[in-house]
Length: 397
View 1 (cartoon, rainbow, N blue to C red):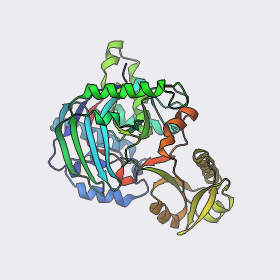
View 2: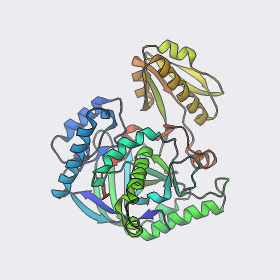
View 3: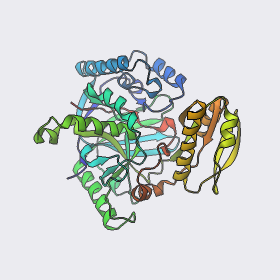
View 4: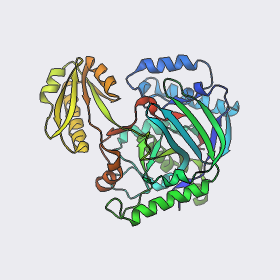
């Protein structure tokens, strides 16, 4: 059985798509001005902003906000804000890194696992924090639709999948707000052939022992790890009451995602930096473990300097996170995860910024298959403005 399903996609019918599409909800979590400016830009126009819960606001009137989101979803469905299109969508996104090509499709959550030693066709790449799942599941419980910012990666150095894509009808073509670049969506004319190419790609990697193991994998998670885990948890919670026939076709069994070739030239692997908000910055730096031949950068009060870091970047991140957690437990403060060096340096006026090195994207599949999940927030696919914008939706009930 394939892990891929051709979805019934809901596309916005609105006249102003630039106001409709907004960046992933887990971005700019320390930048309230970004979200205020976005809200001002959107105004009263129909927008995906009204259908998502930006993480910067989590913990503030959660139930009221979730209820408002669900109500607006039903309103948009009633008002004809969406039209339905069946198929796979070729998404071409131009940013400062170039033009990135992805394919929007549905994946079977029965073929996905976020467990460390899982042998599923679709796997998480980073540790999943279980306590972060219930709030996301709560958002789904009464939601009629999902809007994905999930990006999965596939390992295709020869670019065999995109080479076989046939172009059909153009679905959208517009500039994204807030510096997100430009995006074009085109219906794929030969979806079944593309799905077969994904299947043969995974089979070929397994038979060739590409990762030093006989394990088979089709996709790993690039972005949206906890959102996909929440979709899985929600599906597991409702499938118990369904018959076998109902389970096969229930819309919540399938999650809408964008899949991108790991080797896409415009797909930049960026480290996710740490910012510790504390009034004890000197104590933090004094006791920070420093070992290894690698390098990281510490910034305090706008000043910066290099420190020793382990050669194994995942191990270095794990040790750094353990130290941060211990420091906060003993001294108070908080931690945030920042996309971008300059953003981290700017925040260091209010604490300590730790600018981390990046893993090589060519290592990703092997690292995951050999050692299981990486530490959470190990890498990011590009800067914050390059993250997936919400455009398409799909029914989940």
